[in-house]
Image (cartoon, rainbow, N blue to C red; front, top):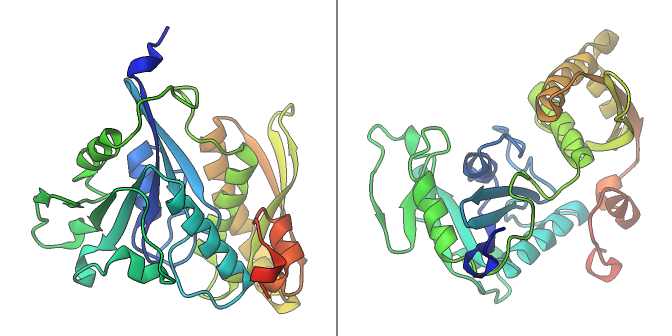
Length: 294
């Protein structure tokens, strides 16, 4: 039986602008490809939680949406969840691509007088893109790469040092705190980002409509919602070519995640202006307050 008096558990929030490499770093920290990785920015919407348990330390890494200037209700909900993740964390990793020059102060990305309540480590990401990756680390900052894993153990050690002494909150072999359905929908969105143009993936929402775990293969039906009928046609593609490609890629990811064969069926429906409607955002899991999201 574990001596809980000497164990540590901490929540670590990842912060940064869109495309700062947060999802890639989360996957490197937990050792599993949980979060969507795409060259297109703003692919993360709902916070993804990955668990890292090693010895007497358990860390819950929370990867919310990138910090941006919101233009509509969905983005305002994403920003609100990102700020909430930072406010409830025991430690914060502030990610900034090394090629983008000096990192501005984290509060400047949020504004409104916000200040961090937890210790902050600035992580200069994507250092593998430099001709000679820096090897330095100092007070309050570290150079890291999710590709080469440079700096990853240093980041984990810093997070562990800031985790409070208390019992583990989750079983030691768990990878995440979120249900399988969440990740299935995320993997479908990831495949959509890979196969669709610049604008259409941002108008897509994925919802698991049916999940039969007792069947072999596991039967999963996911509905992809678009805002306009023209977008639905693009998602389907000529003769269904695009939706089949999305389904093939997503099925492979889901099968790897579940460790079993999967029959994945995708449907496409239209839900007009869902990104601007409070009711639709709540349906897709966002906590929103009407007075804050006109």
